[in-house]
Length: 328
Ligand code: G3H
Ligand code: 13P
Ligand code: NA
Ligand code: ZN
Image: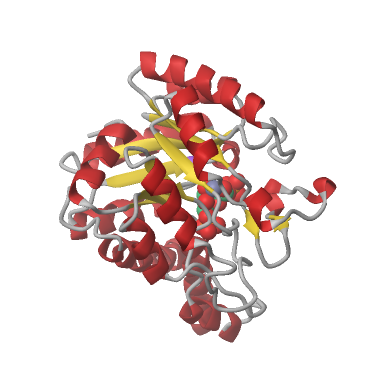
């Protein structure tokens, strides 16, 4: 059944687990996520970006969520708008039947320009008023996703124009977070701790200076009742990079967020963990391997089935590692 994210995350907080929020764009991703949730008895958050809506079209995305709820009626599912860029975008998601929206007012409507506190607070509060009237939850974001190694915001958050930022400018400030939650009444808060979107997060296995897990503890101590959200939480599994590169891919050395560090975050208030890149890597590795090993095959179902199996495997591992398993 479709439920609000607030309900789902309240349960996670009460029982001390985290929930991966996987991005969906198509049938294979949706089925991989749901089959893994069914296998591990996990509640589900699926999220769709603006790019997903562009790719699949709003009617198909809506039917994908409805189909998931119909095929697996015993699994609680929150359907979330990822990185909504304005209250209007969030409103359209609510009209589509999403049970949760993210108003990302840390950036402007272009999804690039960093915005100040007042702008962010204003659009988030406006979205909360509208969403709560419909029983829909709201995730806000405070801070700047990006690399503490380079002092640059991630590509999707492209702060290029703003130049290099100091550690303190990028990380979420605990006092400001407390003010933001008080001002907006948001249900969940995405925080910046040095992660960025995509596969190229860190040039070396991350240590505390570039992945600020301690900041999570400080924020959680200040706002213990707010559900914290980690973006850019793919772990970028070495085994999938190896498979991609073995079968014709060219992905340079790179590191993601280790699953153990996410588990530490979950012990300190992180409830929603956004994962997209890991499923992309698993899908690509599976398809490359299959096509390389079966050069005469041309039925797309054959290689899409492999992609689904690779993504399923990642989902099962995350449900287990985040403590989601057994909580549906
Ligand atoms: O926030 C980024 C997510 O990975 C979604 O990516 O905008 O390419 O769909 P996308
Ligand atoms: P990854 O690119 O690390 O998977 O992060 C996805 C994300 O944060 C979606 O909002
Ligand atoms: Na989101
Ligand atoms: Zn994100």
